Length: 386
Ligand SMILES: C[S@@+](CC[C@H](N)C(=O)[O-])C[C@H]1O[C@@H](n2cnc3c(N)ncnc32)[C@H](O)[C@@H]1O
Image 1 (cartoon, rainbow, N blue to C red):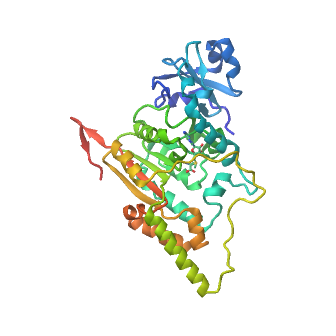
Image 2 (image 1 turned 60 degrees about the vertical axis):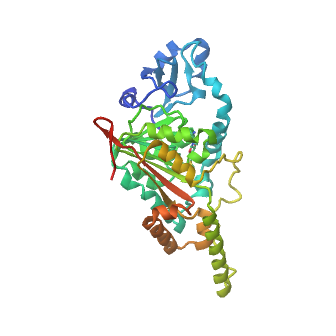
Image 3 (image 1 turned 180 degrees about the horizontal axis):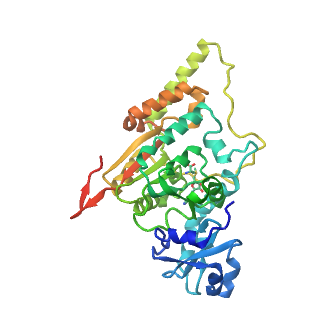
């Protein structure tokens, strides 16, 4: 867990921050000033461990800073006057999905199981140095050549940086800015990034950042967990904070196409035939799911998947300079079902995906959406990226 960071550390971040609601400027105050400015009935809501706060003059709202984490969530913001925050409650009906996703990750997804692996990772992702782990890692590293470096990279929503390779996303940047609604996620991310990280607990549909301040942005496996009616807002918000010339890389699952399903059926048939030929029916892959002793999730995790056409429409609304590429043809279940622990299969699949990214995008399970923000030169002309 982070040691208390000095307020001067946060002064530097003021250059990128704004009020998540009004987008107005924020000022930094100490905890003593905060207590002095809050109405008496609001003071008990100041979280333990608060060292300072960001204050929005326009909305008369304070956002507490706890350790290295700034809490920009509506539900935790503090009223500086009795008239303030009138509008925040109006979104209450929309926040139930957000709350249920937050609870899933805080209480289950980012808790570690008996083997020290995050429950989310054990369920959907790599568990150890398996062939699927290699497949996934290699696909994540393919983002690196789009992250050209600078002062700030945005990781939305970072989780706890569960994949070690994601640490490399910020190698060429001064600060790795992690945002997430899960406190547990950000506390864990802090143990990995330390003072190279800046951590904001926030809904990515209302980012507390000024326009065009990030020199790169990534968002892995998150949009599908945002309420369907707000997913476009989230993508537009990520693009808004991107600096011209920089790339926003979004990783998302896509709804399975007919071609993907046919391909899976053909591969199942081939697999069955091969097993019969080898009289090898007893060979069972090792189960990598969490065991019986793992805790159960508090409820089902909200998920609303989109198809390729939806992603293309969102991208083209924002920029003419985008690509939708295959990240991985196979989900974890599919990969392990067909190939067990075959590294050769992982290498072959990656070769296919990298050689034919746009064709394989039509039949893949996970896509990489790369949005490049054009540089406007003089009289509104746009420089076409390479
Ligand atoms: C599947 S995890 C992905 C984590 C990480 N990007 C990765 O690739 O491992 C999804 C993350 O999104 C966060 N999340 C979901 N909805 C969010 C929202 N509206 N705003 C910010 N974070 C959100 C969850 O708390 C969780 O940490």
